Length: 421
Image 1 (cartoon, rainbow, N blue to C red):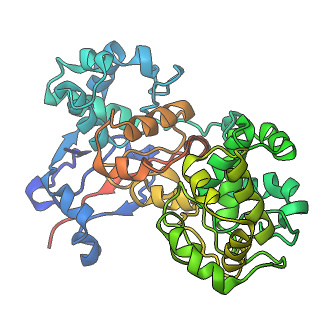
Image 2: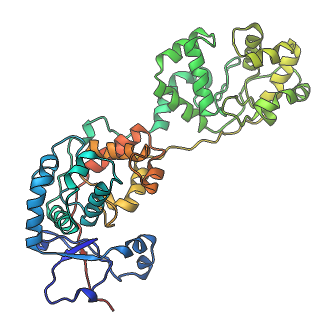
Image 3: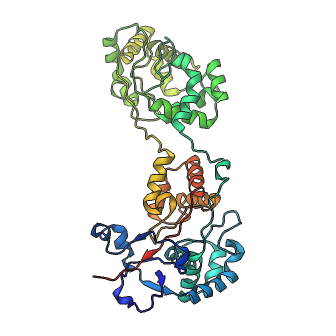
């Protein structure tokens, strides 16, 4: 459903059928773009094709006035007298794209969006009333940017930088990038993130007995540990810069029994099992001794260690220390700028949508944006594109994105109809 002005003297069937959104009261609005027949490439785009089922609807100033009357009776209590909400969790609708408003109200009517209050409020509106209400809200001045959005716990967070900062206390023993030069201290590169987190939790719980490591683990929050795990997983892997005893050749033969869990040449493919490639040999031997005497409680490893004498353990340690560690499969989190770039593809530059099916999100309420993203993540709101986009967002990502868009200046957008060829 497209809403365009009543152009006196124009024949509707001579105008572009895909010109989707228009606001009445054009004297207050800038013409920001043309969307009909301007570029053949755009006309062939998936989004342009998606809009083919929309048709223009003409809204006069009288229609907008009627839309205001309906909105004042049904919507103003929650969304504000001018479409600018003062209620936490309730979105601003002033200046919103009318086609989007129309289609979402229809979704509430049909139950496709599960919200009892909205369903009750709009269930008796017919299509004519929906067009007028959508035209009214679209004609209003958009809300101002949220100047205080940055103060609501939404400062952009770089988890890699946070991990590096948290790992600074470990550099004295483990090296600045997790490549140790201290005999008896483990290399921290080449580990899957999940293994690193589980190891730190084992020190914290006492399952692994080491006084200093327990103190360090206890002082780190769960978030700190996750960030450290990410930081080390992203570092260039290198073997420990420490000497080895034993025979690497003999250790290679013995390592056949370990490959099932720890991978060929000590490169594990299972997050539950550590990679051994490039590990400090003295640390490896100490860990095997701990499994053997029970200070590390892991039944499988206890049985494996029990079958080895000190010389065999030294040979294994020498073999694995000589192997080249590899970086685990890890996805570097997107920065706020990278997430914004993705969101802007549909929602327009800085959240000012030019797509009739995508809402403008500039200057939207911050807590509403957070709630909406989490609803897409949990499939409470059903949209395959938004579910895919939001699936990997962390709570920090959601907070940062919501704050960013809440701070942006909302701009009205008019789709202009031009005569067909």
